[in-house]
Image (cartoon, rainbow, N blue to C red; front, side, top):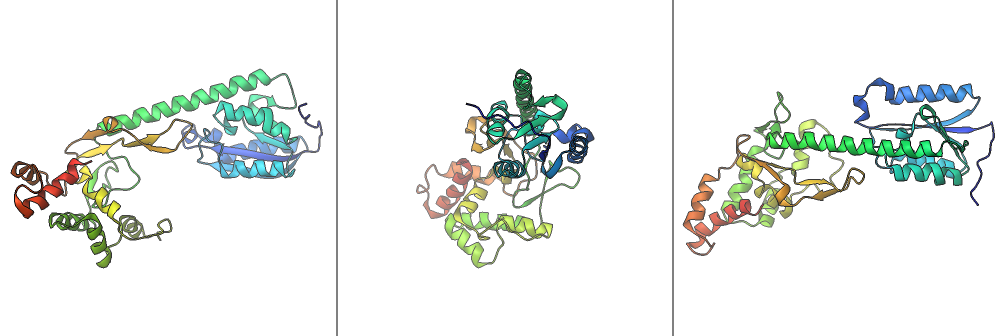
Length: 327
């Protein structure tokens, strides 16, 4: 038998507000402060006690693993609140399956009333269940549509050869005039050239990393934090390793080419990053000044088809060319 929600007047209210980056484009009407002011006023007009405000700012509605939402559910579980109040169902979430699970099962099982004010949804009333279902599906479709539009914009940006990334690759910096354009960084470019020189001398990835560490050369992420004047609190090991070296040597960005769309998410609901097949990569050549020219590498290929055919010197050059061919 389903649990009944107590029809009581003395509620301890948890006010929930959420704003994603996409919602910010809509304007002030959905801002966190606007939601808090609207819901706080309504709760006070009803004579209810506001226990706390729970605000997830900049968090997508397609995931329910949110810090403040988790705290709200825990407080409901601990019987600190018995009414959850939010502006509308889209603030609760944009995954219709999960949103329905909370409104139909989780909150009722905790003896917690749920109200989505602007949608006229109140779990104390039993005549709006179909409205809740329709609203949740519409919110889910909105998230799907928004995700598709964002992907389309990114694809267009990739195909135009513009750089899209939080950090510029080691050896480059983002142009102050256009953050989608890469310029050679005079501070870090010598490090990249040093790595290529050591590779041309026949050094393995691990030996190059060991040498860089011995020379006290900062790792790529450390360079970023040094440039921004902040402490690197994310990296547990601020040292070079063979994987980092190999990634740099096989990155065609140093040839002046932009290769993007290598990774993506599982779906608009599951934001886990996954590698895409090479057939989906988007490559645009000659988008910026290269740090390494492949013209000499082309001559290496003409000289020998195997690293042993023309002696050690050509074998070393062949190895450096293979680094690029193996991307």
